[in-house]
Amino acid sequence: MQGPRPTEPPDRPPSERIVEALAGIVGADRVLTEATDRAPYETDWRGKYHGRCLAVVQPGSNAEVAKVVAYCSRHGVPIVPQGGNTGLCAGATPDDSGTQIVLTLQRLRQLRSLDAEDGHITCGAGMPLAEAQAHAEAAGMLLPLSIASEGTATIGGVVSTNAGGLNVLHYGSARQLLLGIEAVLPDGSVVSRLTPLRKDNTGYDLTSLLAGSEGTLGIVTAATLSLSPRPVGYTTFLAGLADVGQARATLRAVRTLTASPVTSWELFSEVSAELLVTPPMATTLPLEGPHAWYLLGELSHFGEPADILDDLAEILVEHDIEDVVVATSAQQRADLWAIREDITEAERAAGPTIKHDISVAPSQIDSFIETLLAACRDLDDTIRLNIFGHVGDGNLHINVLPRERGQELPEADQARVSTCIYDLTRDAGGSFSAEHGIGQQKIAQMARYKSGAEIGMMRRLKASLDPTGIMNPGKVLP
Ligand SMILES: Cc1cc2nc3c(=O)[nH]c(=O)nc-3n(C[C@H](O)[C@H](O)[C@H](O)COP(=O)(O)OP(=O)(O)OC[C@H]3O[C@@H](n4cnc5c(N)ncnc54)[C@H](O)[C@@H]3O)c2cc1C
Image 1 (cartoon, rainbow, N blue to C red):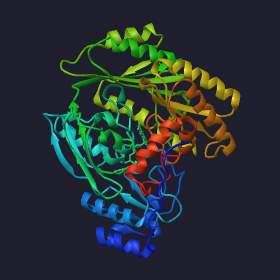
Image 2: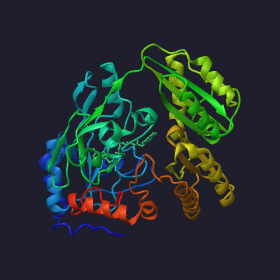
Image 3: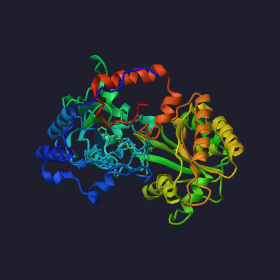
Image 4: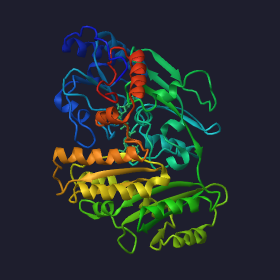
C-alpha cells in the first residue's frame, strides 16, 4: 500500500511536564489526570473499547485549543479529539499507552450566530446537536440533521464523522449541510472559514475535506450549518411489511404522489421489534400483527398542508401493505419516532453485538438483503441479525446478536460473519461504512476494501497536514 507514514515525533518531555504545561494553558482544574475523572472519556459508547490516556484536557475557547495543539505538536504528544463520545467506531477512544491526551470540545458550546433570512447557524463544536436544533426552531427554522444520539452528540462530532441519520433522504448528511468551518490544524494554526456562502469555488474545498476526517486532520472548533424552512406539517406512518421490496417500491410511488417531499423512509426488522418489546425496553408496537419488517415513513409539508391520506392508503394497499397506523397528532408522531429511535438502545441492552453499517444503491436493497440472509443462514443458522436503518438511502445497520442475551459471539465467528457481510456488500457495489465512519473499529476493512490508490492519497494528505501523526493516531488509516 502506498503513501508516506508519519515521521519520528520530536523528543517527548516527561508526563508531569506535559501535564504542567497543559495546565498552564487551560487551568489546572481543566486537566483531568485522576483515573475516576478520566474513565468516562476512555471508553466508547458501547463499552466495547477501553483506553488509558495521560490526561483529559478541557479547553474553553478556540484560542486555548490552538495553544494546546501547538504545544502537543512541538512535543510529540498525540491528541484524541472528543465531542459527545457517542461515536460507534471508537474514533474518540484513546489507545492504552497512557501517552495520548483526550481533548474534549464540550466547553465550546456557544451559539455564535443565527441568520433566519439567509438560513444558517454557527455554533461552537461542543454544542449538542439537539441544542442547535432548538436554536433553529426558536428562530422558526429547521436544522434537519437528526440522529437518535442528538441530545449528546456534538456539532464538532457530527461534522467530523459526516453523520447521516433520519433525514438524509431529503436534506443530505452533515457534509451537505456544512457551509463553513473553523478548525485548528495539527501544527496549531487556525483555519477560519465560517462562511455562510452557498457558492464559493475558490480553490480546494477544505471544509468538505475536514468533514468526515474523524479528528485525523484537525480539530473542528466551530461550524456553520445550513438551515431550512420548517415544515408546517407531517404525514408520518408505521406499517408492517412482508418483505423489503415493499419498502423500495412504495417509496418510488409515494415520491410522485405530491409536491411534499418524503423526508424519512426507515426500516426495521422483526428482530428489532422483538428487542424493543423485551425488558428493560417497554415499547408497544401500535400495529395489529407481528410482521417480518416494519416501515416508518414521513412526508414533510410546506405551504398548504396537503390532504394525501387517501392516495397514500391506496399506494400502500396496492403494494399489499394493510397493517398501517398514521399519526394524527404531534404526540403520536413523536411516539412513532421513539420506536425507531430506541432500537440502538434496545440492542445495547441485549449485550455485545457486532455492528455493520453498510450502504448499497437503494434499488438493490431487497435483492441484497435476500442474498445476505441466505448467506448468513448457510454460514451459521444460530445467529440472529438485527437489521434496521435508513432504507430510503440504501443504508442499513446489520448487527449480529449474541446467541444468548448478554453473551458475546466467539471472535472467530464474529470475523467470519463480518467478512461475509462486507464481501457481499462489496460485491453489490456498496460501502462497508455508510455513516458511522472508520474510527479504530474498521481499520482492517479500510485495508481490505479500499484501493491502494485511495489509501495512498489519504496518507499523502494526512502526511502533509500532520507529518508527525499526532492527530488521532491509529484511526481511519491502516
Ligand atoms: C443511539 C445512537 C444513535 C446513533 N444514530 C446515528 C445515526 O443515525 N447516524 C449517524 O451518522 N450516527 C449515529 N450515531 C453515531 C454518533 O452519534 C455519530 O457518529 C456522531 O456524529 C458522533 O458525535 P460525537 O460528538 O458524539 O462524537 P465523538 O463520538 O466524540 O467522536 C466521533 C469522532 O469524531 C472525532 N471528533 C469529535 N469531535 C471532534 C472535533 N470537534 N474535531 C475533530 N474531531 C472530532 C473523534 O475524534 C472521533 O473520531 C448514533 C449513536 C448512538 C449512540
